[in-house]
Image (cartoon, rainbow, N blue to C red):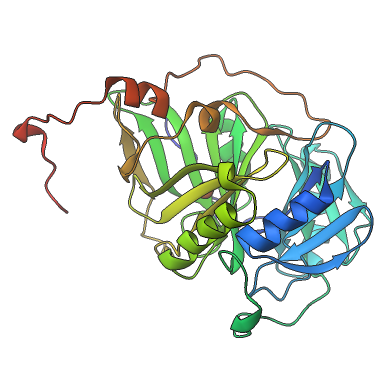
Length: 346
Ligand SMILES: [Fe+2]
């Protein structure tokens, strides 16, 4: 199926993916994980909530963790719009297309418009929030992977084309899309508003479910340092997948699971995509491909486990895939390789 086209005159101006709201059963454990391993800074905290930010972020928080006695969930993903007027334009747009939305009160944020998109994903739009000093040059205070800034999130949806169309209508551009080799079936679509390949990634799976949020780190050493710290402060089993390099060549990565199972990706800066003629690239998903430039394929948990959105009904897709998991890969791995399969370096 053809991918949706971008509306270059959107009804309001979303600038980027910017924040997340997750719930957690043990805030002390979450605090240790996000500060000592990921390297986020605590902007504020009380008995029931933690507000965290990356070391270069001026925004008050890019991650809010709320204490819960229930199953951990994602309360919302968040995006910035350019200014306050865009929030009014967004409200008018959603009213016009018959999508429910409402202004809500959120600590440390100014007006916040919450809506559920056409897949049921809960999204908060904000133009401004309280600011904090950047701490990127206060290197003596940095911990763990010294995460710089929030970059993107990945959401599982049962219909990637319908989810993508909703956001292309709002001005999102497609950087890459994963197509099952030999078919026109899209199983993953990467969308962006800022000038790198990702703000939202949609993967074909039961959803909506929150799969992961990504934080950019400065160097490969910082990524490894985060993993070293995980091993040193009591989270040796939090490393789920990686390090590796993404299959379509954009960034080094690793994925970690927090004490509630929420997934965070640490990644290096990706390529720049700005020019209008830099059009979507189709990436063939080969059968039994490890899906990366190098490194092992993701484990079964990466494919099958995700965080539910609070209050959203999870819908299964009409067809499920059969990805190559780490478990399958290792059970069939052979070090013998025919020379004819060597890939030319680009
Ligand atoms: Fe990611």
